[in-house]
Length: 561
Image (cartoon, rainbow, N blue to C red):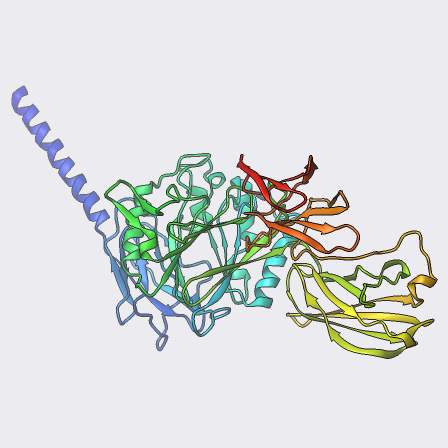
């Protein structure tokens, strides 16, 4: 054979091999994946005769999205970069960490068993869920307490799900965390995870270990009337294999099956790139207008702070939650956030502080003293809290010599930790030992009781070098903002991790506690305030510094750092 003919044959053979390889890749990419979504009543993982098959459940290969037919069946084409098949877990159901399957070579059929899980979902679709983020643990040791807080609160308060928005953290955290908190360990709720920048670790690609332990980095699920979407951090310590285009194309297909009657909440480890219009896309012409699709809120972590902000143009909330394990970088305490979602997808926030065992303490009747108000009544101030169960109600009564001398009355809640009432002081009590008993009733059925005793003599007959003159609650918690006395007035500032309008600088009369003025702030004050030259200075967690006239409470100037 001549050299010329040999070259032609060689080129032809290479051409045929290339065509064959391309054909093989195309066949692989176009493989048909099939299966069914069904209610696994006996929880054996198998589709048995008579078990219900679910219609109109979205199933995805990470790009394409289809819905199951009336027989619960689906068929997906697959694509060349797929890692998983996963479902949009339907409302009222859960899986034991199995809403996804890693694609196995040679396997094309994947059935998805689900189990009823109606805990926390009301008849109108309203529900509650817990948001945590940035736990950043190194191992299981030392982390069981806050995990138990989450588990117990979820069981007590019928929480629909718990979501972790990333930074689990590094190889040690990723390997440990899944053993502490996952759906299989929960009674009637489920756990969802997102990937953070410190969860992109060394491997064949950044998300390899996360996928091995936690599954897909983007997916969706439904609860009540809300469609939840988990999106991944687009950059981190190591490069991910996925791109924003991958997320965008999947999300567009996912949302094609979401009706206008549903609201949308998105999870991510950080804020979106566009916090003005909330358009998620890859160009000026290819994007998803999330508010137009029903976006109500974007929940994130990353910044280790507690912020709630409603954006004026779209009305969308961005909500950041720090860590339940060790608090945040701006003095934010260890806590988790409980979100209530109503039937229309509107979101309300409640903060729960970690590590606090059920406690009850009377703070206004210490050392046998008997403080009295100008009205002649006794101020009864009680601090009480439990991480795992809110207080439903609180009551008090009075006894003398073991007999009830004042019947039960209710205390009124004033802030996260404080309850208050005023006890009428009766003349027949003079020269008698009296005991005040306070009883707190927690939502989980637990009851706590505490008592304080005092000997009643009229104040003018018993002079003490130091005695309580007055007690006042400003309607919100005070944290790291010690009160300052200036020109016969007392000044302090409050925190409001739900950003519900309770953060303020408050001025009171130092002699009697009467509030002279209150200036509302954008967010919590978690640092000292200062006073000089007739001005009160405070800085909130959003970086705003306020200069307020001490006499009138009028804002003189403000500046954002």
